[in-house]
Amino acid sequence: MKLSYPSKVYLNGEWLKPEEAKISVFDRGFLFGDGIYEVIPFYSGKLFLLKEHLQRLRYSLREVELQCDISDFESIILKAIELTELNAADGAIYIQVSRGMAPRTHYFPENYDATVLVYAYKTNLRGFQNQFKDVLVSNDLRWHRCDIKSVSLMANILANTEAKKSDFSENIMIRDGYFTEGSHSSLFFVKDESVYTHPNGKFILPGITRNLLIKLCKENNIAIVEKALPVSELDEVTEVFITGTTTQITAIKNLHFPDRIINFGNDIGKVTRRLQLLFCEEVKKRTGVDIS
Image 1 (cartoon, rainbow, N blue to C red):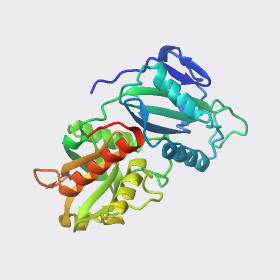
Image 2 (spheres, one colour):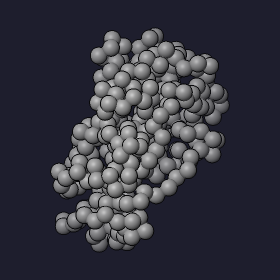
Image 3 (cartoon, one colour):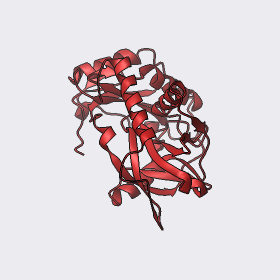
Image 4 (cartoon, helix red, strand yellow):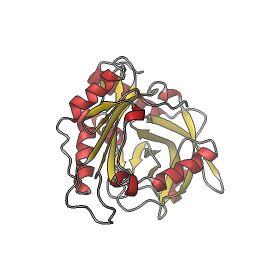
């Protein structure tokens, strides 16, 4: 996948070229990873689940006591899409809020001005229904506040880098014998025709796509169980899939453990297929864009 920089970024009230955008070396986001981020998808320039993403951003800011007025973020987001000429493209918005510049201390400074970064970038959001992926499985080494969408992501980066070294795109994690989530995705299993996913709490991120999928299950008579799946019950699982803002709903073909590989067939399962279809219908209903 080719990566590139956006043509314009919003930084603290200004629209700048990336090479012109500068922050202080004493910014706490740079020194400590003391900040929050959010990623919001758009299809053909139409934002999807904007309200839900901004609600999660507010939650994360509140949990880390980071003061920032985000009342004008929607207009900034729309401007980002316009300035980067992505009105007819698929892509995502990246938002990052740090605690700003302050002398280096391990406690929160009393006075600060938050550093706000926003930009839009193009990414492929079509064809996820045709992906059937292999993923790595390893121990969950993250902290105990995974519900906060913090920019402090070293454990996630280590996990995903380990996966990439084996040419996999994701690393599924286990904590105390139970599956939690991926390094950058939510995790679902199908067992006895029911869909299982780890309950919201401090060990997983409250995924926006995940929450939508739970809602779609309930609305369409698909049994959904918010319960952590033990590794010991994996032999009862018939389908696995992951979800995320840009992952959307991606089927998993093989789980690669250090000592074995667990296969889930040669074709994407019927429950996963149905949920992918329902997701596409939801995107069309909310944005008017057909991604099926």
